Length: 325
Length: 292
Image (cartoon, rainbow over all chains, first blue to last red; front, side, top):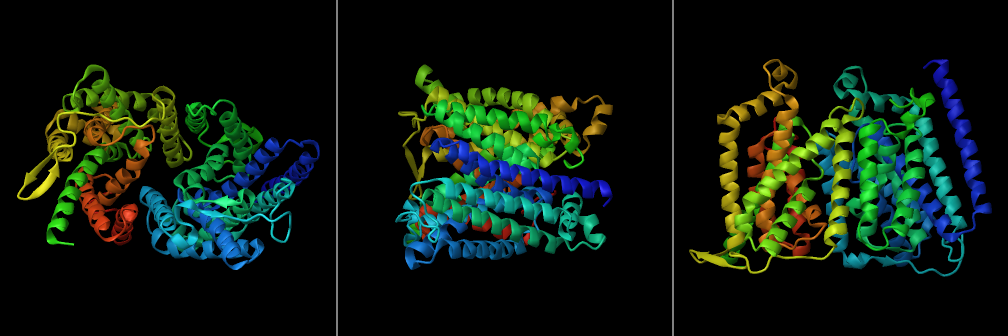
């Protein structure tokens, strides 16, 4: 592309670097555990949504079943650790690899489907996996897995006293997901994906291998989401099928990108930074009574933003207009 | 497992399947009309069940008598949802598919929140209705009366829908708008009016289903979520764009669910439905009777 595009990419990288440094310094001033918890979740959702965005945003294959990969990551790590004593770091890589392979195995038949047939297939596959795990006694069935916490250790990646190590890991994960997207945006794959999204038939006739493009996007996306799932298992140290593989989770992962701007570099970050604190705060301040006010606020926000800003919140920044395509 | 138990559960599966067809009919109609999947469809069902429950609790109107009232209330509700939300979602110049999914999904969350706020998360049920808990025996097979009535109503609704779409002026207007929304404006048909009526009709159908469901199922804010996915699978299995595909899809889903429950533990009965959906679309990517 032209120099304008190269300039924009360089500026994106510098902005991201500055933001990462500022984010890394925040815990030095914010000591409140409740706030730190929200920051960890915000960074985790930014990473997850960024990864979801690769397949669903850039490549245009809307998945509402990504909880499958999140759950696979969480369960692989937790099972390997509790049953075989394998360190979570290896569990994380194993979970990512398994998810990437499964994403391609599922992609093989699914990528022939288009539109709503594809979306429903992703929901249904994640639902099948959820039901199977709920009935799998060895993996804790519906009760889930309690990960024993035995003191602070980087080796075992568990920390009982401080949230900070989790914070920095989540920050690293968000940075990696962002960098991967940044790098892919200007690679052969990035252009293929956008072509596949806009018009698969035209792309195919111009020599884009549509099927392989989708498979590549699915593998990268699933790998990163599974690493997020492994992280989450360590962070909460207790997982059950519904909370890591439920349909709700697939949506939570998609929403920051949708509201921030689907198929854009900054959309998932912007969406997560606004949405996650807002969700957590409404839940603790007005939703505590269980009367559904948090759902009303949250749902209204989704309706209003998706109708008023179909390109997402990034389109508000006029200097970003060229990015929000 | 005797032949009798198999026939018995297939019969119940068939009845439930026809009811699934009725739940899905509105979804199929709306999609066929304007290519929009209503992700709040389950919540439409939930509202219909609450309306039925309150008509029974406050005015002692039996759900069977209430059904037309519920359908009328949902008709208005569906048309209003179109005019307030969907109309604008369809104008989106970018990410059209995403905007439709998430605007109706946001509506679903709001509706669930409002139900929790006004009706509390308690489980409610219609007790002592005319047919609730009763069964009839036909040739040695016991059929629950609410489901039987629901199944007959479903058949009647699909027959009525057939004549409505093919034999009335409004049906032809629907069909014409579906084919070319721009051209119908030239012959004096208001696209928005047709779409609003289509949404009303689709919601009225799920209203009928909700009135029957309330007789034998608990009413609570999240009840729609359990049936929404089945409704999507039913419509997609039959093929988007085909209202009668939803009828066939419903019957298949009901029978598959009953068969799965015979073979696998009850908690896995939905796995059969999902697996059959995947199998069908892997072989026929547009469902059984789909055109788009």
